[in-house]
Figure 1: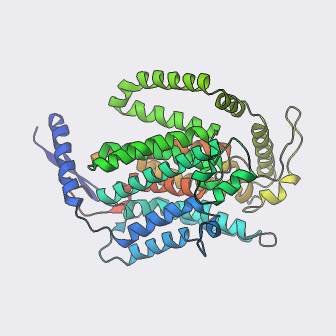
Figure 2 (figure 1 turned 90 degrees about the horizontal axis):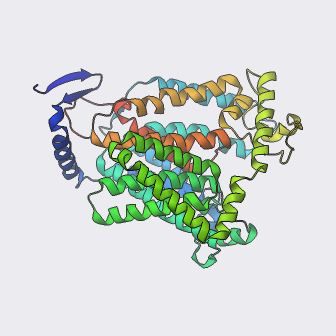
Figure 3 (figure 1 turned 30 degrees about the vertical axis):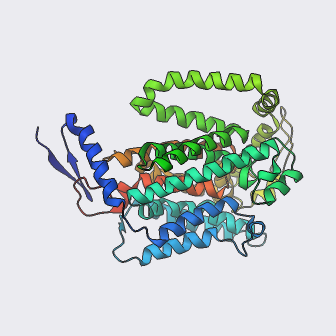
Length: 454
Protein backbone atom coordinates (compact mmCIF):
# COMPACT_ATOMS: atom_id res chain seq x y z
CA UNK A 1 0.00 0.00 0.00
CA UNK A 2 1.63 3.33 -0.97
CA UNK A 3 2.47 5.85 1.74
CA UNK A 4 -0.06 8.58 2.29
CA UNK A 5 -0.47 11.47 4.72
CA UNK A 6 -3.14 12.01 7.30
CA UNK A 7 -3.64 15.51 8.68
CA UNK A 8 -3.73 16.09 12.42
CA UNK A 9 -4.01 19.44 14.17
CA UNK A 10 -0.66 21.15 13.92
CA UNK A 11 1.35 18.35 12.37
CA UNK A 12 1.35 15.81 9.56
CA UNK A 13 1.99 12.15 10.21
CA UNK A 14 3.57 10.18 7.40
CA UNK A 15 2.49 6.56 7.31
CA UNK A 16 4.78 3.95 5.77
CA UNK A 17 4.51 0.22 5.20
CA UNK A 18 5.23 -1.82 8.31
CA UNK A 19 8.02 -3.70 6.55
CA UNK A 20 10.02 -0.49 6.08
CA UNK A 21 9.50 1.09 9.48
CA UNK A 22 12.79 -0.08 10.99
CA UNK A 23 14.86 0.95 7.94
CA UNK A 24 13.13 4.31 7.66
CA UNK A 25 13.52 5.04 11.36
CA UNK A 26 17.22 4.20 11.37
CA UNK A 27 17.94 6.27 8.27
CA UNK A 28 15.87 9.12 9.62
CA UNK A 29 17.66 9.08 12.98
CA UNK A 30 21.06 9.18 11.23
CA UNK A 31 19.96 12.11 9.09
CA UNK A 32 18.60 13.90 12.13
CA UNK A 33 21.81 13.44 14.09
CA UNK A 34 23.85 14.80 11.20
CA UNK A 35 21.48 17.74 10.86
CA UNK A 36 21.85 18.77 14.49
CA UNK A 37 25.54 17.91 14.98
CA UNK A 38 26.61 21.46 14.08
CA UNK A 39 23.72 23.28 15.76
CA UNK A 40 24.58 26.37 17.74
CA UNK A 41 23.13 25.81 21.19
CA UNK A 42 21.52 29.04 22.44
CA UNK A 43 22.70 30.64 25.65
CA UNK A 44 19.36 30.04 27.35
CA UNK A 45 19.85 26.27 27.07
CA UNK A 46 23.19 26.43 28.92
CA UNK A 47 21.71 28.78 31.54
CA UNK A 48 18.80 26.41 32.02
CA UNK A 49 21.08 23.40 32.52
CA UNK A 50 23.27 25.39 34.93
CA UNK A 51 20.23 26.48 36.97
CA UNK A 52 18.89 22.93 37.08
CA UNK A 53 22.26 21.61 38.28
CA UNK A 54 22.55 24.26 41.00
CA UNK A 55 19.23 23.18 42.51
CA UNK A 56 21.24 20.29 43.95
CA UNK A 57 22.77 22.80 46.38
CA UNK A 58 19.64 24.86 47.12
CA UNK A 59 19.72 25.96 50.74
CA UNK A 60 23.51 25.69 50.96
CA UNK A 61 24.48 28.60 48.71
CA UNK A 62 26.68 30.34 51.26
CA UNK A 63 28.55 27.10 51.91
CA UNK A 64 29.55 26.61 48.27
CA UNK A 65 30.95 30.13 47.90
CA UNK A 66 28.07 31.86 46.11
CA UNK A 67 26.85 35.23 47.42
CA UNK A 68 23.22 34.57 46.47
CA UNK A 69 21.21 31.56 45.24
CA UNK A 70 21.62 31.33 41.47
CA UNK A 71 19.43 28.37 40.51
CA UNK A 72 16.07 30.16 40.23
CA UNK A 73 17.52 33.38 38.70
CA UNK A 74 19.33 31.35 36.03
CA UNK A 75 16.18 29.43 35.20
CA UNK A 76 14.16 32.67 35.04
CA UNK A 77 16.80 34.34 32.84
CA UNK A 78 16.78 31.35 30.51
CA UNK A 79 13.00 31.66 30.15
CA UNK A 80 13.29 35.39 29.43
CA UNK A 81 15.96 34.82 26.77
CA UNK A 82 13.80 32.19 25.11
CA UNK A 83 10.85 34.60 25.04
CA UNK A 84 13.09 37.26 23.46
CA UNK A 85 14.40 34.89 20.78
CA UNK A 86 13.30 35.91 17.25
CA UNK A 87 11.22 33.29 15.49
CA UNK A 88 10.72 31.22 18.61
CA UNK A 89 8.18 28.43 18.60
CA UNK A 90 4.66 29.10 19.75
CA UNK A 91 2.94 27.13 22.46
CA UNK A 92 -0.37 25.68 21.36
CA UNK A 93 -3.46 26.61 23.40
CA UNK A 94 -4.13 23.82 25.89
CA UNK A 95 -6.50 23.39 28.81
CA UNK A 96 -3.43 22.83 30.97
CA UNK A 97 -2.54 26.54 30.99
CA UNK A 98 -5.96 27.59 32.24
CA UNK A 99 -5.89 24.92 34.95
CA UNK A 100 -2.32 25.83 35.93
CA UNK A 101 -3.20 29.53 36.16
CA UNK A 102 -6.25 28.72 38.30
CA UNK A 103 -4.11 26.50 40.55
CA UNK A 104 -1.48 29.20 41.05
CA UNK A 105 -4.15 31.87 41.70
CA UNK A 106 -6.11 29.73 44.16
CA UNK A 107 -2.96 28.66 46.03
CA UNK A 108 -1.73 32.27 46.15
CA UNK A 109 -5.05 33.42 47.65
CA UNK A 110 -4.77 30.62 50.20
CA UNK A 111 -1.25 31.78 51.03
CA UNK A 112 -2.41 35.40 51.37
CA UNK A 113 -5.02 34.29 53.90
CA UNK A 114 -2.17 33.20 56.21
CA UNK A 115 -0.30 36.51 56.21
CA UNK A 116 -0.55 37.01 60.00
CA UNK A 117 1.56 33.86 60.45
CA UNK A 118 3.18 33.49 57.01
CA UNK A 119 6.96 33.46 56.69
CA UNK A 120 9.51 33.19 53.91
CA UNK A 121 9.39 29.40 53.96
CA UNK A 122 5.76 29.36 52.81
CA UNK A 123 6.59 31.88 50.08
CA UNK A 124 9.41 29.74 48.73
CA UNK A 125 7.20 26.65 49.09
CA UNK A 126 4.58 28.29 46.86
CA UNK A 127 7.25 29.05 44.28
CA UNK A 128 9.07 25.72 44.43
CA UNK A 129 6.14 23.32 44.81
CA UNK A 130 3.55 24.96 42.58
CA UNK A 131 4.77 27.73 40.27
CA UNK A 132 8.13 26.34 39.14
CA UNK A 133 7.06 22.72 38.47
CA UNK A 134 4.10 23.93 36.40
CA UNK A 135 6.42 26.27 34.46
CA UNK A 136 8.87 23.42 33.81
CA UNK A 137 6.27 21.55 31.79
CA UNK A 138 6.04 23.93 28.79
CA UNK A 139 9.68 24.97 29.18
CA UNK A 140 10.77 21.37 28.67
CA UNK A 141 9.04 21.33 25.29
CA UNK A 142 10.51 24.61 23.98
CA UNK A 143 13.99 24.68 25.54
CA UNK A 144 14.90 21.11 24.58
CA UNK A 145 13.44 21.27 21.10
CA UNK A 146 16.19 19.49 19.15
CA UNK A 147 18.04 16.20 19.36
CA UNK A 148 21.27 17.91 20.40
CA UNK A 149 19.64 19.84 23.23
CA UNK A 150 17.85 16.76 24.50
CA UNK A 151 21.17 14.91 24.57
CA UNK A 152 22.65 17.77 26.59
CA UNK A 153 19.89 17.21 29.14
CA UNK A 154 20.70 13.50 29.25
CA UNK A 155 24.39 14.27 29.67
CA UNK A 156 23.62 16.63 32.54
CA UNK A 157 21.52 13.95 34.25
CA UNK A 158 24.32 11.39 33.84
CA UNK A 159 26.87 13.74 35.41
CA UNK A 160 24.45 14.55 38.24
CA UNK A 161 24.00 10.83 38.87
CA UNK A 162 27.74 10.22 38.96
CA UNK A 163 28.30 13.06 41.41
CA UNK A 164 25.27 12.37 43.62
CA UNK A 165 25.62 8.60 43.65
CA UNK A 166 29.31 8.46 44.47
CA UNK A 167 28.93 11.33 46.97
CA UNK A 168 26.21 9.30 48.66
CA UNK A 169 28.50 6.27 48.73
CA UNK A 170 31.31 8.36 50.28
CA UNK A 171 28.87 9.63 52.91
CA UNK A 172 27.72 6.10 53.66
CA UNK A 173 31.32 4.87 54.05
CA UNK A 174 32.33 7.96 56.02
CA UNK A 175 35.03 8.99 53.53
CA UNK A 176 35.12 12.67 54.48
CA UNK A 177 38.14 13.43 52.32
CA UNK A 178 36.16 12.61 49.17
CA UNK A 179 33.24 14.90 49.98
CA UNK A 180 32.86 18.19 48.13
CA UNK A 181 31.71 20.85 48.89
CA UNK A 182 33.02 20.76 52.42
CA UNK A 183 29.61 21.25 54.05
CA UNK A 184 28.95 17.61 53.25
CA UNK A 185 31.77 16.49 55.55
CA UNK A 186 30.60 18.86 58.28
CA UNK A 187 27.05 17.51 58.03
CA UNK A 188 28.40 13.96 58.25
CA UNK A 189 29.96 14.82 61.60
CA UNK A 190 26.71 16.40 62.84
CA UNK A 191 24.41 13.59 61.73
CA UNK A 192 26.16 10.23 62.16
CA UNK A 193 23.46 8.08 60.59
CA UNK A 194 23.43 5.33 58.02
CA UNK A 195 20.94 7.21 55.82
CA UNK A 196 22.71 9.61 53.48
CA UNK A 197 21.40 12.38 51.28
CA UNK A 198 24.05 13.37 48.77
CA UNK A 199 24.31 17.13 48.16
CA UNK A 200 20.72 17.58 49.37
CA UNK A 201 21.54 16.10 52.81
CA UNK A 202 18.17 14.33 52.53
CA UNK A 203 17.71 10.70 51.48
CA UNK A 204 14.52 11.04 49.43
CA UNK A 205 15.73 13.58 46.83
CA UNK A 206 18.95 11.59 46.45
CA UNK A 207 16.86 8.52 45.75
CA UNK A 208 14.42 10.25 43.40
CA UNK A 209 17.15 11.87 41.29
CA UNK A 210 19.13 8.61 41.26
CA UNK A 211 16.20 6.59 39.91
CA UNK A 212 15.43 9.23 37.26
CA UNK A 213 19.10 9.31 36.28
CA UNK A 214 19.24 5.53 35.80
CA UNK A 215 16.68 5.84 33.00
CA UNK A 216 18.09 9.08 31.56
CA UNK A 217 21.68 7.86 31.57
CA UNK A 218 20.49 4.58 30.09
CA UNK A 219 18.85 6.47 27.24
CA UNK A 220 22.10 8.38 26.72
CA UNK A 221 23.92 5.05 26.34
CA UNK A 222 21.30 3.88 23.87
CA UNK A 223 21.07 6.99 21.66
CA UNK A 224 24.33 8.97 21.86
CA UNK A 225 26.63 8.88 18.84
CA UNK A 226 29.62 9.74 21.03
CA UNK A 227 31.50 6.75 22.45
CA UNK A 228 32.79 8.93 25.29
CA UNK A 229 29.30 9.96 26.35
CA UNK A 230 28.04 6.41 26.07
CA UNK A 231 30.73 5.43 28.60
CA UNK A 232 29.79 8.38 30.83
CA UNK A 233 26.15 7.33 30.53
CA UNK A 234 27.05 3.81 31.66
CA UNK A 235 28.90 5.23 34.68
CA UNK A 236 25.82 7.39 35.31
CA UNK A 237 23.66 4.27 35.45
CA UNK A 238 26.07 2.85 38.05
CA UNK A 239 26.02 6.12 40.01
CA UNK A 240 22.23 6.22 39.93
CA UNK A 241 22.04 2.61 41.11
CA UNK A 242 24.39 3.37 44.00
CA UNK A 243 22.35 6.41 45.03
CA UNK A 244 19.15 4.38 44.85
CA UNK A 245 20.55 1.78 47.25
CA UNK A 246 22.46 3.89 49.78
CA UNK A 247 19.62 6.40 50.33
CA UNK A 248 17.89 3.57 52.24
CA UNK A 249 14.45 4.99 51.41
CA UNK A 250 11.54 2.64 50.88
CA UNK A 251 9.60 5.00 48.61
CA UNK A 252 12.65 5.18 46.33
CA UNK A 253 12.98 1.43 46.14
CA UNK A 254 9.27 0.97 45.40
CA UNK A 255 9.25 3.64 42.71
CA UNK A 256 12.37 2.15 41.11
CA UNK A 257 10.82 -1.32 41.00
CA UNK A 258 7.51 -0.08 39.59
CA UNK A 259 9.14 2.17 36.99
CA UNK A 260 11.56 -0.55 35.92
CA UNK A 261 8.88 -3.23 35.59
CA UNK A 262 6.48 -1.02 33.62
CA UNK A 263 9.15 0.23 31.21
CA UNK A 264 10.49 -3.30 30.67
CA UNK A 265 6.99 -4.63 29.99
CA UNK A 266 6.36 -1.87 27.44
CA UNK A 267 9.55 -2.47 25.44
CA UNK A 268 9.56 -5.86 23.64
CA UNK A 269 13.34 -6.27 23.70
CA UNK A 270 13.48 -5.51 27.42
CA UNK A 271 10.41 -7.64 28.11
CA UNK A 272 12.15 -10.69 26.71
CA UNK A 273 15.09 -10.08 29.01
CA UNK A 274 13.03 -9.29 32.10
CA UNK A 275 13.09 -12.81 33.65
CA UNK A 276 16.90 -12.91 33.39
CA UNK A 277 17.19 -9.39 34.80
CA UNK A 278 14.96 -10.30 37.76
CA UNK A 279 16.99 -13.45 38.40
CA UNK A 280 20.27 -11.51 38.32
CA UNK A 281 18.79 -8.82 40.57
CA UNK A 282 17.72 -11.36 43.18
CA UNK A 283 21.12 -13.07 43.00
CA UNK A 284 22.97 -9.77 43.39
CA UNK A 285 20.78 -8.66 46.32
CA UNK A 286 21.22 -12.03 48.05
CA UNK A 287 24.99 -11.91 47.63
CA UNK A 288 25.12 -8.36 49.00
CA UNK A 289 23.05 -9.31 52.06
CA UNK A 290 25.27 -12.32 52.76
CA UNK A 291 28.64 -10.63 52.15
CA UNK A 292 27.82 -7.25 53.77
CA UNK A 293 26.27 -7.97 57.17
CA UNK A 294 26.36 -4.33 58.34
CA UNK A 295 24.52 -3.18 55.25
CA UNK A 296 22.07 -6.07 55.67
CA UNK A 297 21.25 -4.97 59.21
CA UNK A 298 20.72 -1.38 58.13
CA UNK A 299 18.58 -2.46 55.19
CA UNK A 300 16.36 -4.66 57.35
CA UNK A 301 16.08 -1.88 59.91
CA UNK A 302 14.80 0.50 57.24
CA UNK A 303 12.41 -2.06 55.78
CA UNK A 304 10.75 -2.64 59.14
CA UNK A 305 11.15 0.84 60.62
CA UNK A 306 7.75 1.70 62.06
CA UNK A 307 8.07 5.25 63.37
CA UNK A 308 7.83 6.91 59.96
CA UNK A 309 4.71 4.87 59.25
CA UNK A 310 3.20 6.14 62.51
CA UNK A 311 4.06 9.71 61.50
CA UNK A 312 2.31 9.27 58.17
CA UNK A 313 -0.78 7.82 59.83
CA UNK A 314 -0.95 10.65 62.35
CA UNK A 315 -0.50 13.50 59.86
CA UNK A 316 -2.79 11.95 57.27
CA UNK A 317 -5.52 11.41 59.86
CA UNK A 318 -5.12 15.04 60.97
CA UNK A 319 -5.42 16.20 57.36
CA UNK A 320 -8.63 14.22 56.94
CA UNK A 321 -10.07 15.91 60.05
CA UNK A 322 -9.28 19.30 58.54
CA UNK A 323 -10.86 18.34 55.22
CA UNK A 324 -13.99 17.14 56.99
CA UNK A 325 -14.39 20.38 58.97
CA UNK A 326 -13.00 22.91 56.44
CA UNK A 327 -13.52 21.33 53.02
CA UNK A 328 -13.81 24.49 50.90
CA UNK A 329 -10.85 26.68 51.86
CA UNK A 330 -8.76 24.52 54.21
CA UNK A 331 -6.54 26.12 56.84
CA UNK A 332 -4.33 28.07 54.41
CA UNK A 333 -1.22 27.39 52.37
CA UNK A 334 1.68 26.21 54.55
CA UNK A 335 -0.37 26.37 57.75
CA UNK A 336 -0.41 22.69 58.68
CA UNK A 337 3.08 22.90 60.17
CA UNK A 338 1.80 25.66 62.47
CA UNK A 339 -1.56 24.14 63.35
CA UNK A 340 -1.05 20.39 63.27
CA UNK A 341 -0.85 20.12 67.05
CA UNK A 342 -4.51 21.22 67.05
CA UNK A 343 -5.56 18.39 64.76
CA UNK A 344 -3.40 15.38 65.73
CA UNK A 345 -5.12 12.87 68.02
CA UNK A 346 -3.78 9.85 69.87
CA UNK A 347 -4.87 6.72 68.03
CA UNK A 348 -5.74 3.47 69.75
CA UNK A 349 -3.25 1.29 67.90
CA UNK A 350 -0.20 3.50 67.15
CA UNK A 351 1.64 6.24 69.07
CA UNK A 352 2.06 9.96 68.45
CA UNK A 353 5.78 10.40 67.80
CA UNK A 354 6.47 13.65 65.90
CA UNK A 355 3.88 16.41 65.71
CA UNK A 356 5.47 19.44 64.07
CA UNK A 357 5.84 17.86 60.63
CA UNK A 358 4.06 18.19 57.31
CA UNK A 359 1.34 15.93 55.97
CA UNK A 360 3.04 12.91 54.41
CA UNK A 361 0.77 12.88 51.37
CA UNK A 362 0.88 15.72 48.86
CA UNK A 363 -2.74 15.35 47.77
CA UNK A 364 -4.10 15.29 51.32
CA UNK A 365 -1.83 18.21 52.16
CA UNK A 366 -3.25 20.31 49.30
CA UNK A 367 -6.81 19.47 50.32
CA UNK A 368 -6.17 20.28 54.01
CA UNK A 369 -4.35 23.57 53.31
CA UNK A 370 -6.04 24.91 50.16
CA UNK A 371 -9.36 23.07 50.28
CA UNK A 372 -10.72 20.25 48.15
CA UNK A 373 -10.80 22.60 45.16
CA UNK A 374 -7.07 23.24 45.53
CA UNK A 375 -6.35 19.50 45.54
CA UNK A 376 -8.62 18.90 42.54
CA UNK A 377 -6.92 21.71 40.60
CA UNK A 378 -3.49 20.24 41.36
CA UNK A 379 -4.60 16.80 40.15
CA UNK A 380 -6.10 18.37 37.01
CA UNK A 381 -2.75 20.01 36.24
CA UNK A 382 -1.30 16.54 35.84
CA UNK A 383 -4.35 15.14 34.04
CA UNK A 384 -4.57 17.94 31.45
CA UNK A 385 -0.83 18.18 30.85
CA UNK A 386 1.70 15.43 31.58
CA UNK A 387 -0.81 12.58 31.44
CA UNK A 388 -2.11 13.59 28.00
CA UNK A 389 1.43 14.12 26.76
CA UNK A 390 2.66 10.73 27.94
CA UNK A 391 -0.42 8.91 26.62
CA UNK A 392 -0.32 10.59 23.19
CA UNK A 393 0.78 8.21 20.45
CA UNK A 394 4.46 8.82 19.66
CA UNK A 395 5.19 9.42 15.99
CA UNK A 396 9.02 9.45 16.01
CA UNK A 397 11.76 7.35 17.55
CA UNK A 398 12.97 10.05 19.90
CA UNK A 399 9.45 10.78 21.20
CA UNK A 400 8.91 7.09 21.98
CA UNK A 401 12.07 7.12 24.09
CA UNK A 402 11.05 10.25 25.97
CA UNK A 403 7.53 9.04 26.61
CA UNK A 404 9.06 5.99 28.29
CA UNK A 405 11.12 8.40 30.41
CA UNK A 406 7.91 10.25 31.22
CA UNK A 407 6.25 7.03 32.35
CA UNK A 408 9.23 6.17 34.56
CA UNK A 409 9.15 9.71 35.98
CA UNK A 410 5.46 9.25 36.85
CA UNK A 411 6.27 6.49 39.34
CA UNK A 412 9.25 8.41 40.72
CA UNK A 413 6.84 11.29 41.38
CA UNK A 414 3.75 9.34 42.50
CA UNK A 415 5.17 7.13 45.26
CA UNK A 416 6.88 9.97 47.21
CA UNK A 417 3.82 12.17 46.65
CA UNK A 418 1.71 9.53 48.41
CA UNK A 419 4.16 8.89 51.24
CA UNK A 420 5.92 12.21 51.96
CA UNK A 421 5.57 16.01 51.54
CA UNK A 422 7.83 15.72 48.44
CA UNK A 423 9.09 19.34 48.61
CA UNK A 424 12.37 18.78 46.77
CA UNK A 425 13.46 21.13 43.98
CA UNK A 426 15.74 19.03 41.81
CA UNK A 427 13.60 15.90 41.34
CA UNK A 428 10.32 17.80 40.94
CA UNK A 429 11.78 20.28 38.46
CA UNK A 430 13.36 17.42 36.52
CA UNK A 431 10.20 15.31 36.49
CA UNK A 432 7.97 18.10 35.14
CA UNK A 433 10.69 18.97 32.65
CA UNK A 434 10.80 15.40 31.34
CA UNK A 435 7.03 15.39 31.04
CA UNK A 436 7.25 18.57 28.97
CA UNK A 437 9.79 17.08 26.57
CA UNK A 438 7.65 13.95 26.24
CA UNK A 439 4.57 16.10 25.53
CA UNK A 440 6.25 18.29 22.91
CA UNK A 441 4.02 16.93 20.15
CA UNK A 442 0.86 18.29 21.79
CA UNK A 443 2.36 21.47 23.28
CA UNK A 444 4.05 23.17 20.33
CA UNK A 445 2.22 24.93 17.52
CA UNK A 446 4.39 23.76 14.62
CA UNK A 447 3.90 24.12 10.87
CA UNK A 448 3.04 21.04 8.87
CA UNK A 449 5.86 18.54 8.99
CA UNK A 450 6.55 15.40 7.07
CA UNK A 451 8.80 13.28 9.21
CA UNK A 452 11.41 15.94 10.08
CA UNK A 453 12.66 15.63 13.65
CA UNK A 454 12.45 18.90 15.56
